[in-house]
Image (tube, rainbow, N blue to C red; front, top):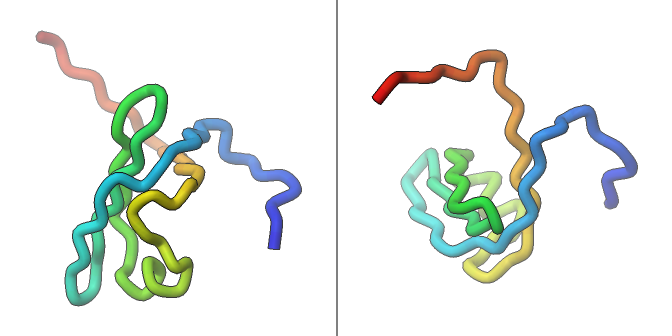
Length: 71
């Protein structure tokens, strides 16, 4: 399967650096040129997508809210 187009504009190509698997949810750290992007997805998805450290992936970020705090 290949993606022909997608409406998500925030896309970060990178490499999986770490996967912390839990019984239901897992954390996947993707190293991108902009820094680390962390995704929390189901452990089932990690297995079905055959995600492994070193895999090249694209992290898609779509959010209805972006919060900003002052320093």
